[in-house]
Image (tube, rainbow, N blue to C red; front, top):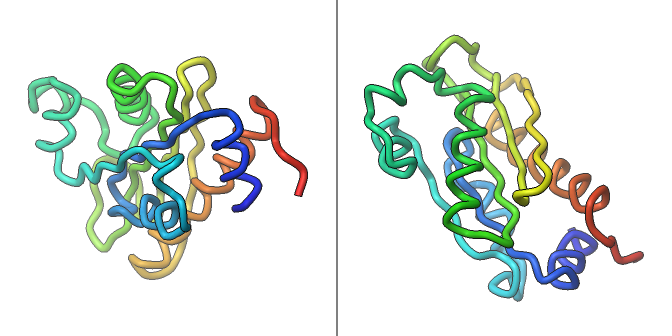
Length: 159
């Protein structure tokens, strides 16, 4: 995590999170570190469809045509996040933590997306276990994806 933080600071980047199934766990993972205000800008938990529609500035009926656990939704949220916050890295999580299913995906299925406006990575993941274990798996995968994203597109300080 230290290498990740050093890279964000060196590159003058900030992070924003837009979370659904991780429920703020990803933002918490980042802001628990001393000095996080230098590189963590803001986090949103958009849990209900109405909240996602409001954030995206679209009618709920239009959003309901998109699977709530999908690459398509992640892409829309990434685009909107970067419209509002250029020169940031945005991370989006959406998935089924259970026990109920949303959309066409199974409990434990999720998508995570990362974008800086120039580069975009979206990945499908699956986790087993309790609701909390599934959420923690999503947070872990998002942090790993961010680390890989930074090492691919930005200077990574040796540690």
